[in-house]
Image (cartoon, rainbow, N blue to C red; front, side, top):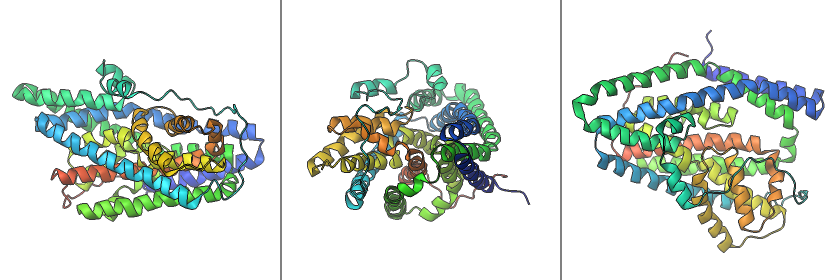
Length: 417
C-alpha cells in the first residue's frame, strides 16, 4: 500500500520524537544537542528549498490573477477589505491571549526561578521599526533584491504594479501573461518534488528539539502548555468557527482540507513551510487565484494569529512570574502597542520573542524573564504556527466570500500522493 504524504509526515514526527528522546537520555546535554543539530540539517535544507520557491510562486500567481482583472480600483477595494479583516483578527487574538493569561494565571500558579539580571537570551533581534521605517520598508528599491531576500510584502507590492500594468497593455502583454501562467505551474511542480522531503524535515526538526530539551521539560511546563494550547484551541474552534458560520463558510470542510498544511507547520514549527501547499489547498477549496495570491502572502506579515496570542500571553506570564500586576489600562495600552509593533517584524528570526522583549522593556518588566520560556518556546511555536496557518486560511476564505470568488461547489483536483 502506498503511503500518503500525511502518513509519512506522522511517521517522521513519531520517529523524530523517539530518536530525540534516545539521544537526550543516552548522551550528555552537550552531546545530545550536537547530534540533534546534525539531524536538523534535513529540516534546514527543506526550509531553504521552500524559501527558494516562495518568491517566484507569489510573484507569478499574483501577477496572473491581477493581470486577468486589470482594474486597480478593484485591487484597492480587496486590499482595504483584507487589511480590515486582518486588524479585526489581530485584536481578537491579542485580547484572547490577555484573557487566557489573566484567567489561568500560569505565572502565579507555581514559583518560578527568576533569571539573573543580564542573562544571555540568544535572541537575534533588532530594534522595533518606527511607523515611517515600516512604511518605507514595504516599497522595494529593487524587485530582484526583494525576490532574492524573500521580502514577501515587497514582492506583493511589485507584483501589484506589474500585474495592473500587464493587464493595461492588453494584447501586447498576452505572451508575458501566458509565460507567467506556465511559470506558476512549473513552480507548483517543484513544490511536489520538495514536499517529498517533508517527512525527513519533520524527523530532523523534532529530533533536534527533543534531543536538546528532552520530553521531561513538558512535565515541568505542563500547566503553561495547557493554558496556551487551550487558548489556541478556543481561538480555532470558537472564534474562527464563529466567523466562518457568520460568513456561510463550511469551517470543518476547510479544516479537513487544511489538515496536511497544519500538520506540516506544526511539526516544523514554521507557518512558512506550508505556504506553497496552502495555495494549492485553497484553490481546491474553491477560492480564485487572485484572492489567494493577494491575501495569503499579506497574512504572513499582518495576520499571524497564533503569534499575536503568544505575545500578550507570554508578556502577562512573565509579569505574573515576577509578581508585577498589570492594570487594565496598562494591558489595553500593551494591546494597542502590539497591534502596531507586531506588523514590522516579518522575516526576523524568532520574531515573537523580539517583540515580547521590546514590550517588556516598555512596561519596565525584566527582559531576562524571557529565559523562563526559551526552553519551552519550540513546543509553543509549533502550536502558534499551526494556528496562524488556519487563521490565514479563514481570512482568505472570508475575503473571497466578500468578493464573490468562493465557489463551494468547486470539485477539487486530487493530487497524487
